[in-house]
Length: 94
Picture 1 (tube, helix red, strand yellow):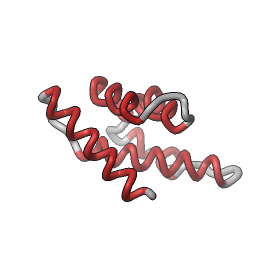
Picture 2: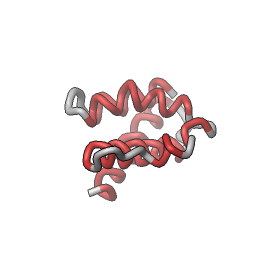
Picture 3: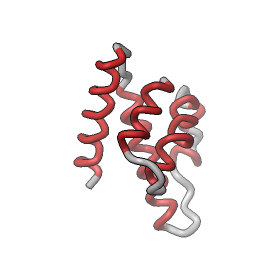
Picture 4: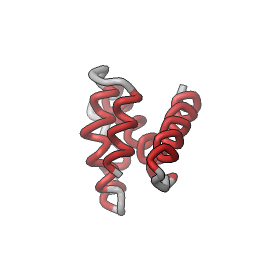
């Protein structure tokens, strides 16, 4: 499931950054994967602390990405927005 999702995410990110003329760091895709896996495990395993939170990964230069993911990717994971809307907002926020 994750390889298919990440292919879709990567293609969506590339399309949007090319359209806006923005460079795309591979960190964006990587942080989406980290965030998604951590959230899925948190929901599935009682008491689970996502790796990136537990080890302070977000504070190592990914604070902005984390803030964008909380604002725009989390609603997608919660079924309250579409992936397209989430990716649009994330890329615009970069």
